[in-house]
Image 1 (tube, rainbow, N blue to C red):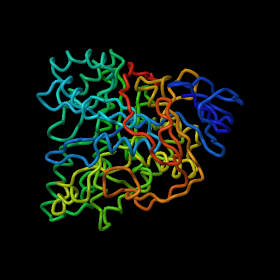
Image 2 (tube, rainbow, N blue to C red):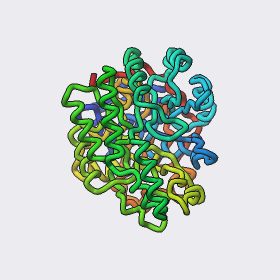
Image 3 (cartoon, helix red, strand yellow):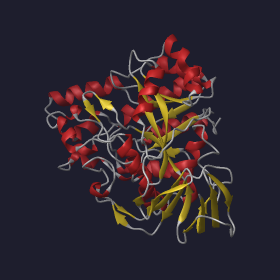
Length: 456
């Protein structure tokens, strides 16, 4: 199908340009100027921004957390993602101890069947040994070129020495490993102290994981990466202290990539005192207004590389497992549908970034680092026809009841958004029109190249 988008504000990598865009089948064939060409469909984009399809670098669909499974699987989660303008998600295939990397890959490949947006996987590793190392070429062959390790969680936690070894090994393959940065020993000690004092409400989830717990992890990662001679990637950065440590590492010449999430830009720690405070239990926890301001300014300065959601949804019934003990509350929240409208409202309308930077944060930089550029992440001839038409004047209120995620709550309930995704083209097909999902189940696996380390 040939689709002609007319009279758009095209968000290119370095500017916004008024003009038209033509697709032919699965590819963009012409960008800019006035286009008069035979087509099957004309889409009027007057008054709207046209972005390359958004890429969510951080989702957890169909994830088993102990005996609990997230409310969203790939079917429901990717429908919500697509309506929000996300045309590609990068989920975490989790290699449990004793499982091979290929077994984890096949398990997540099976989970992702019937996805409505395109998808790829980071490989979350719980082991680093000769057997797992021997599998890495097979992962790269299958298009998995990014990995993850945790400093926390007993079933996934790995030592700093292992992370050092992994960074040193993977840099030789132009692959990258992201780290969940927290000091596990300190947070466990704090949880024990708080519970002994009878402090068990959701408020104490945040108290157990103060800023310095994250900052310590960020600092240890920077040191390990420096000694290993490889890149450091911090997932879901939430604190001004962690940001400062990462900036210092860059100042001494290190290659550092930083991801944050919308919740750390618009939600703050007082929300744990609400009657439904359990829905805000996530890790890292919500922080202060000062932390928000630091991260927003870091978006403006270019110090934050991209924004993922860390979508990991649980119903309020599932969250109730922690009613008598905050440490038993499943960690995570729903957000995959709302990322673009929150970033536009808080960061663009708030004066921190412009729409060109928004396109970089939601699409282009992720495509570059994670081996998808220029197939994805840019509006240029030859790129994939994954396109978002965003209406900056569609003011609305976010409600869980009108989101497509399979969850009865939203951390953004009642948030007043200034704009909204209107239409989405996926793989050359119009799949969302006027905010309504027209076509589902058409997502495809994205085989990724080695990482394009643009800060190298």
